[in-house]
Image 1: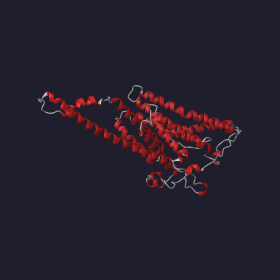
Image 2: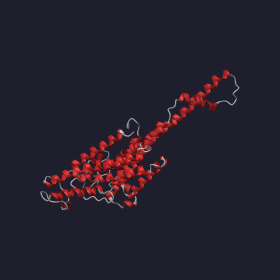
Image 3: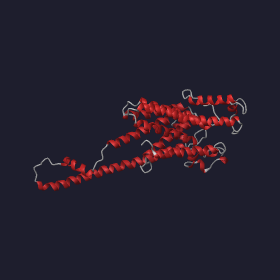
Image 4: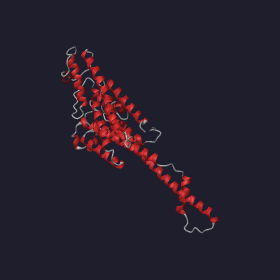
Length: 368
């Protein structure tokens, strides 16, 4: 249960989409906006329509990372929650998380600054950003301190402020670190609560942050809730003993016994056959209800999957395009029609729906 193969596969697909999109995002723009974007002559391409547009939904994949990370970093800690080494494992996870996130950031930022110092960086940047950088071939110490200041801003998740950098894709790292710490705090803070209480409180807490516009926190808490749900299911499965229907039928015959126990011994086989017929009828009824529940569950999962997939295909138009404008009716006033907030919020909702739905699909699609 600690390593869910389908979740790792989903993360790999998301990473591949983000990596591919970064290669040509600054050169070709039309795949990243909707089909109805103006001017018409520069758009109206089939790749701008769902479901193909998911291949160019780099920002949507970022929100998917948040949900997956919330699940991945919490599942092993939830399994160890009742053990004597629980706090030690949480402490170790927090420390390792710092190095796992920021060591690649430091290495990447350092190499980028070295290339810029030697005037080997020729990507287009905003003029305002370039004014904050030391000139190439001058003041090596200023270049070094600039990297340190950038790392300090990235690590400071309390007063987070993105100043831009030579590697714009690293903006997600402090967001990832902040969400991870929220998950660790909730795991420890709610460790003494009952499982059912956690199961209801976590979605409410996640929805509060979503209403507030903190889409990244919502994604991480939702991933934690999915991990809690998976662990509860696994615990229920392992704690229940396997049953043998014929054996249970023998014991359940008492329910159909006649009050008159003084009947002839030779009538027992007839009554036994009658009992078995009734039992088979009950079992068939239960089986039919179970099948109906499973069918409804699968249909619901498919519908949730389609809705989540559709939200992830939302383009980067700066406003809700046709096909998505109905979402404006559902947006809370807290988002204040700010594109940078509400487009990430809707995509995070889509990611939450997608991961939930995949987890609910038949076992052959989500083998662990």
